[in-house]
Image: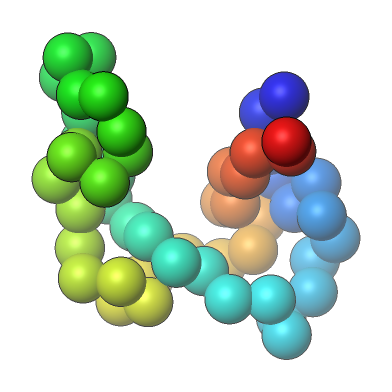
Length: 53
């Protein structure tokens, strides 16, 4: 399921891995979407989106 908006808590100890992810819909993996370098972001945790497996 998708988790949004600090759904894992507004914990600044948690890393933000990706920012500015742009997918066209044809990618087989999020790794194939364009994005900033790993851990390079200008996000706050209130902008988080995550995945719960």
